[in-house]
Length: 69
Image 1 (cartoon, rainbow, N blue to C red):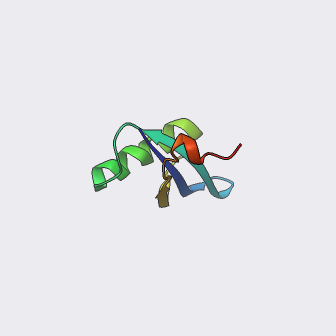
Image 2 (cartoon, rainbow, N blue to C red):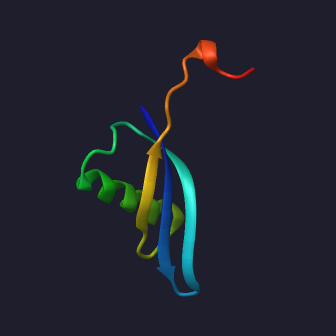
Image 3 (spheres, rainbow, N blue to C red):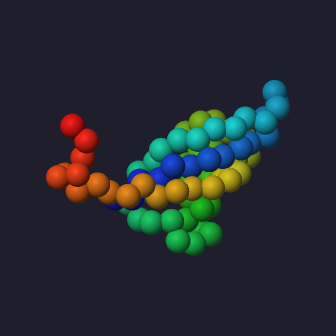
């Protein structure tokens, strides 16, 4: 699984809505089709009319021995 932090914006009736969230995906984001899939997820999950993915960062997996206590 691949964890990402996403930043997005969407024009809404009340003005622009901006936000960020963490998502877990079964495959890495590599192509525009992947970006379109994530954009669709934002639209459906947050009820956004026309979301635009501004950026994303993949979280690095931390081995169990290095996790903070």
